[in-house]
Structures are given as structure tokens and as C-alpha cells.
Image (cartoon, rainbow, N blue to C red; front, side, top):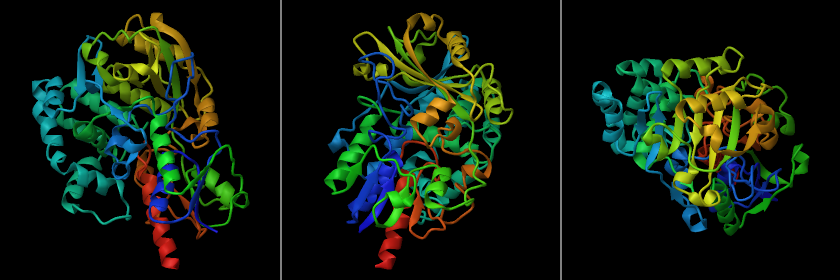
Length: 470
């Protein structure tokens, strides 16, 4: 009998399997797709030689993850590449605010009236960042806080809505960039805890940047899988699990799936009936015949580029998709251009480019033209660079990854109490009513992102239980 079986080979499932194998437990992992990866894959979606990331592309949480940093992933081929700027947010007048590794450079891009306010916001946390991120991403109770005072200060700053936090800024550049940071979790700006979302992304950039993985995001998953195999773990792909009886006998079963799928497979009935899925992504991967023709020079050297004319436009776009049940007329876009630092992703002189906006869960329309009209406002002539497109609306995203229910790439709405209490109110969010079944996907704390911490935290719950039985 195996000690643990893990279902789903996304970053969290792979991390959970690795953490258990590192501690001497026998582990087998089962993945429905032909390759491991989940939300961290790389494929030729458009033309031969163009290597796209179907979901995650830039990895501020990956390089800062306490789980990943404790593993020898570089030994297995993972190499982080940093653009000149982690992120830029261009404006219609050709200027831009930037999120730089340097706090001073970032603050200066906001203008003199907000530079000091931004520095006062982030600088107190940076010297204690490693401890803070470990404490924050280990909540609710997988580890005692190492620095409870700093964690409490962070909570006081971050628990209120981001709209409260941005009142300290007087001008639009700072407000708009921060609104965009919150928009990465597809949550309305006035939700509980959204200030913490923006702060985490900003601090992550200042601490270690927003890199891409050389060759594509598949490198993250492949490194985890290779390490798992070296530890003696088994990886089975192209193996769909429909019920627990499809799996070999084990002392524990760990699911990197949506709560809905887990309830169906493990026979948990309506245990997760109150879990909400959030707004969906509408994503377009582009093969371009050259760089994106951004008007703002800063955007041309940034790995990630946020698109939204001002904070009001961003807020309206997020509200339309999350609360009003309609596609926004001017969507807030998150874009990634890996070619600025990893030219091997495309043939010489060409580039891959990645963009998505937000739409209601399960939306069936086509946002492509709206996305490209929004891009043209900040990069005139963009459409002239397009060689090919791969379009994925909510339905296509859900087919690619079953965790993305209705196209929700966060595996559950990151808004309201569910931003903090996932997948339901519990001091043990990784456990289920079945004593041998656990959940480790992004539906559990600390939530969405390629960081492996949900898998790491769930693995802790599993190994404590197994050792307690022993």
C-alpha cells in the first residue's frame, strides 16, 4: 500500500507529492493530461517554433515561494530570467508607471506627490520579506508565525479594501498601477483583503522580481516532476480519475482539483456546495512578427505589461465581469512578452505575446476584437504585427484545465471572505470529511498562482496525520 496518492499534476499537486516523498513517504501521482503541468505548461499553440504558455507566464510568486526556494529546482533545469523591468503600466499620453526591482525607481515613476507615500507603504516590509511571505502563505495554521508583529502590521495595511489603501495616493499613476496589481486575482477593488493582494505583488517584485522561466512555464512543472522521480515517486500521465476506486490503495489521497471535482470523485455530496467560482479569463496567445509597438518606452523592456487607462477604467472592467454579468467594453488586460528576455521562445526576430481580459464565468462570446482595440490604444499598429492567434474563452480554458470551472483560472472566486477562507470556513482547509482525502489546489490557501504553497501546506497536514497514525 502506498503512503500517498496525489491526483492532478499542476504545481500544487507536484509540490505536495515532492514534499511527501522528501520525508520518506511512498508517493504516486496521477494526471489526466498527457503531460504534467496544469496551469504551468508550454505549448506550440499558434505556429511551429512559437512556444506559448497557455496559462501562467510570469512568476513573481514562483520565485518568491518558500516551497520552491527550499527545493533544488535549478538542478533540474529551472532558470529564472529577468526583464529590465518586472512590470510596466503605460498610459494614453505615452508615459508609464513602473514596478521596478528598485523601490526608488518605482516611486519616482508615480511622480513627486506620491513617491514618498509609496516608499512609506512598502519599505517597512522589505527587510522582513522572507519571513513575512512564509508566514502569510502558511496561514491559517500550518505553521506558527515567525514574525507575528510584522504579519499583524501587514494585516492592518492589507485587510481593508485596496480602495482604502490607495487613498494615500494623490495622482493616477500610483492608483492605476496598484489597481492593476489587485486585478491579477480578478477581484473587485473594494473587496476585503484586496489591499494585501496589491502589496504582495509589489513586494514580490522589489524582493526578487517578476521573472519568466527559460523556455516557458513548463520548466517549473518539469523540474518538480524530475525531482519527484529522483525521490522515488511515480508519475502516471494520461490517467483520468473518476472515483476513488480508480486509484491504488493508499493511506492518503491528495487532490489538486477543484472542490467540485473532489466532491464528485470522493463522494462528498454537497460539502462544497457553498464554494463560489469567480470571473473567467478570455485569453489570446499571439505569434508576432516583431516586438509589440508600445508607445511608452518602459513597456518595451518590461516582462509584464498591465493595460488600463486609469483606476476607474480598471474598476469598471472588474466590476462588469465579476458583479454585473457582462463583458467589459474596455477590459483590464494583463499581458506578458517573454521575448524581451527569452528570445528562444520564437524564431529569430519574432515574438510570442500573451494577453487576457476578464469576462463573466461561463461567458460564451468572443472578446478578441475588444482586446485588440484596447491594445491598439497603447500600442498603435499592434494588429499589423500579428501572424497568428490562439483564442481561449472560458469554455476552452475549462477543457484545457478542469480546475478552471467556467473559465475561472483562480479555481474559485478570490473575493469577499473566500479570498481568505478557502474553500470553506475551517481551521483545516486541506482536510475533508473523508479522513484519508485532502484538497491541495488553488482553491485552498494561499490561493491562486504558481507557487506550490497550497500543495506544500496540504502535504504538511498529510504527513502530520500519517505520522500520528504511525
